[in-house]
Amino acid sequence: MKGVVLAGGKGTRLYPCTLVVNKHLIPIYDKPMIYYPLLTLKEAGCTNILVVTGGKNAGEFMELLKDGKQLGLNSVVYAYQENPTGGIAQALLLAEQFIGKDKFLMILGDNLILEKGQEFKNIIYDFMSNPLFNNSAKIFIKEVDNPSAFGVAEINDNNEVINIVEKPKEPKTNKAVIGLYLYDYNVFGIIKTISPSARGELEITDVNMKYVKMNKMSYYNIKNEWLDTGSFESLYLANQVIKSLNSN
Image (cartoon, rainbow, N blue to C red; front, side, top):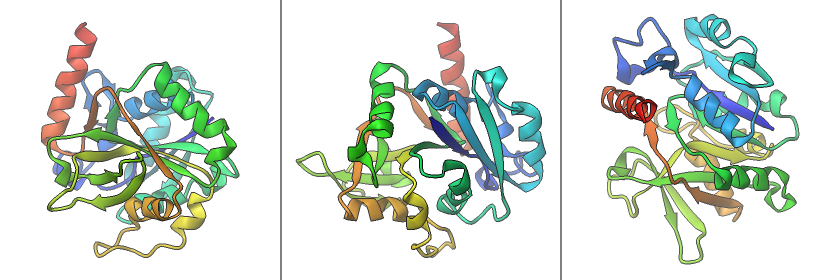
């Protein structure tokens, strides 16, 4: 199965630490940050991976990860995002040739998603193999204390995703959409139909809402730890969490 890691961007929330290094190369306890999303994809059963990166550190990803064999992956290949501020959806569009006509799992490179177990693997495998999920997408959600910082999903009584709002000032739920997504190849056509947001980005929430409006979006509640390590506070917490897990 195929997976995509988005590891571009400028990491402005971590300035000045990321002025000269890509944030995904910063260590979290005993591993570079980029290892964690790769290992999440491996846990899910995705062993052929595309890493999308950019800026002046692209060669360092290749030097660190090589072909992925040392992490137990079948292959790691690379794509270069020339515009690091174009948004998640623009970066994902660079995976179109790699994906072809397949379904895939996409993860943001600054997300620590420590989900494990057979249930998680079954969710991924079912999406990938079941024809019912053709022309579909699945988001992963986690209940949080600060939903205004994230995209927020609204779920109806029939367990259907009916809306996703990006960083709402008054969120209707506390169900944060985390940086893990399942798509089929039709996502690339959808990306080409959306327009940049007010901040000049192709927003992944706009892509997901296209699936919601087609009644083709489903979701899964993750059970284990999730951290978005894009800020100093969350980066500090991530080091504590990983150290604690390694000590047990």
